Image (cartoon, rainbow, N blue to C red):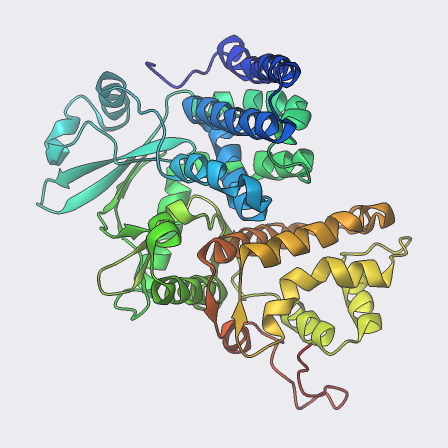
Amino acid sequence: MTDLPHRAVTRSAKLASLPLGFAGRTAIGLGRRLGGASAEIVTREIQQRTADQIFKVLGELKGGAMKLGQALSIFEAALPPEFTEPYRATLTRLQDAAPPLPAASVHRVLAEQLGDDWRDNFVEFDDHPTAAASIGQVHRAVWHDGRTVAVKIQYPGAGKALLSDFNQLARLGKLFSVILPGLDIKPLLNELKERVAEELDYLNEAEAQHAFAQEFMGDPDFVVPDVIAANEQILVTEWMDGTPLSKIITDGSQEDRDRAGLQLVRFLFCSPARVGLLHADPHPGNFRVLEDGRLGVLDFGAVNRLPEGYPPMFGKLTRIFNQGDMESVVRGLRDEGFIREHIEVDVDALRSFLAPYVEPTQVEEFTFTREWLRHQAVAVADLRPTNVVRQLNLPPSYVLIHRVHAAGVGVLCQLGATARFRDEAIRWVPGFADDPGEPEDTALAAS
């Protein structure tokens, strides 16, 4: 591979290979069934090979296709147990690595963005990337002042490739249902398509990362590498060592996983209050656990700007939901625009749909597990005849908040973390704690 494939015909051909490959594997599987192989073994092999091919192609294409792969990797925790093991390695591998651009292409981008004398900025520059993101890859280097730095380089043609990716992927919904039968791919694609364009300008990312770095400088829980230099397609930041969160998920002790889970929740909940920003891409590849136990945070391309912190109605409706007053919940959701005037919802279906997001705040200590998430996923799927999901509207101001919570729950279930998550909501989420000024409020009830 030379550059990021950006010609529509090239990318379309790669994506077209996915359904063709699946058709071939299905035909071979049918032959094996006729030859006496069990249906369970054949189905498992087809699904595993389909997952391998899907994520290999997504990794090679990078751009919007790889970003979709990273998003899908979060849902790995909801897969049926009999398929978890073969997918876990493939999906985790995608989060942290992808086929790299060759050195010649990297040098060409650096020359275009920094000038022909780009090497004067560095004492050393490692041509082999240490990590790959959806629209760029990261190289380790030594800045001219002796500091070790991370140099994030945007793939040539990344912007042009995105629209083609999403248009092509929208036609492959049936194929993705092979590995995630309950996933409706179209809303996910639409949301990603709207947000990914914001990540193309690294100056925006630099501004957000610097704000986080300044706020959390010297913090006992978090580390954010500060920005050293940036333009639209090159971002140079301080280097940060640490153990990837994906390794904590697979190899960490229960104590390590509990601490990382609590820190993740604390970071997501406290950031809007402290920075006025919400990190909107919480997949394991964006977090590191440092030797001193602090949680390092990377990749601020996707952020939600919340200068006033979390919307107070978010915490208030969560509290009211826990108290069992669904009439007030429905009324509040209407006021916020989640339920439009002419729409009537099934209250029981709405309660079941919201429960996974609210349940961890109902008890003093909560354990996130893959089994719990699968149970919640099945419960939501069973509600589809009521159309409660389609009846709900998602106001623009809540799009990224919803995305962060859904993705965060997936990561917490991968960690299998146990902690006092409710305490974080009480401390950081406006409106969640009991308000003595409202006489109708009662003590928070656990269910």
